[in-house]
Image (cartoon, rainbow, N blue to C red; front, side, top):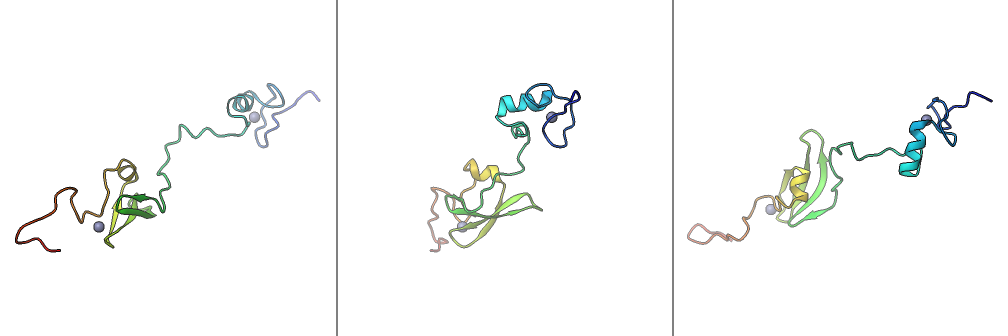
Length: 110
Ligand SMILES: [Zn+2]
Ligand SMILES: [Zn+2]
């Protein structure tokens, strides 16, 4: 056997070391597995926040069309919020109240 190829299926590149081609060998060296795919460079479309609570909001489902999380508020309302706004704490409710500013006066209603 002279023409050995990388032991990773469907690679087909000549062996560089330890039965792998140069790329897969490097990958194994770096990631502990020849086919481990480094996900660092891939920008995740969104983090899975399903069921997670952010103050008054609980992320219920991902709205693919709008690229936002459909969140259920403690008051019963829903709101679509971008994931990073939730994780950053920028949005904490459906908007039914404004933090630290309880309304008082003749118009205030329970
Ligand atoms: Zn390979
Ligand atoms: Zn609310």
